[in-house]
Length: 279
Length: 145
Image 1: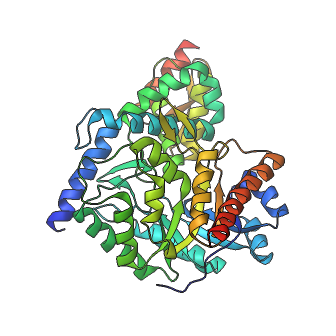
Image 2: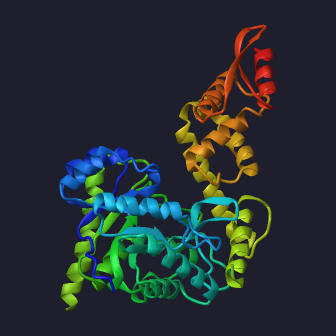
Image 3: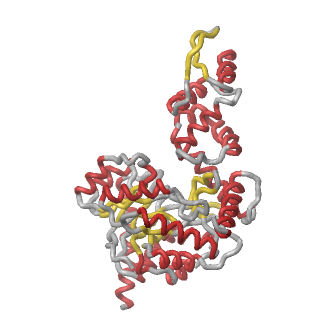
């Protein structure tokens, strides 16, 4: 396993609407940027300022499509790598998913069939992407609104096998774990017990909403208590992970943002306290 | 491409096509219903945010017009959201019954995306003119004005 440092503390996804709040809050120790927002590699000066302040920047991809049978977007991998070099990032991250097939673009992360064939394809794609990357790659679990009809593996088995065979890090999205519990009947506790938490690079948590029995991972609402309970459950199992808030829309006021971050810290603290209590 | 890749490629193509149309895939249509609705809503919202003046000018018609557009237009393979918004504007210019304000705003978006805009004399003065099929649409608007 790579000995690359992992991020700790609280982080946030950088958006122009949150730039001032992020700049003013030194407790936000690591910042994730979405590589697709900077197609020509030109980044806002505010990010350089954050680096000068000692914050860690992590480039995050959403369009590489590592699970595409017809090949992933090599240019998007180069873009991730260029950003990682520019910001001296400890790693970059992407999803175990596909976003395009043939000449069709889904415009969204779609789940892979959890079959041996799909696993082999995604592993080969990741290995080719790793040849381009100068830093380690962290892979994120996605939320899904449907499951493919046949599966050779559970969600945890599929993710674990990919992480182990590609020697990649884990970006664990706890809100996606919650979404899959609501939408697909997955068991969050079992999932956490069966993924390689020793590979954890950092954690995502974001808000969503439930409508007609379906959970939508919108990143536009406050984080639910249920999603935070998975952060707590995670922190019962491991020491102080870095947890990053994703907020992409309906941006909160500074006060609301502080409250949201306080709730996340409380969820981490609760898990850590239980962990120490159990030790 | 080996057989496993070929099979997965077919599964993935069928799935993405089924999300945006009435074709079938391995995943039952009833299971894809929420994905389809979510992705359409996501595109609609993101396009409306990227061209707010057009969305505002269309008002309550925006959703229905966008649904017409999305039925015939999968997400563009290149250019992401900006390309989706520009395509939507191109689509608007093919509709016969839009307000002049909407047409003008759509023309501005298309022009900024590199669609050539020229001017021509007409009965009502100097008007914008397009090459190709959108010219007649523009002329219809001018004629109606």
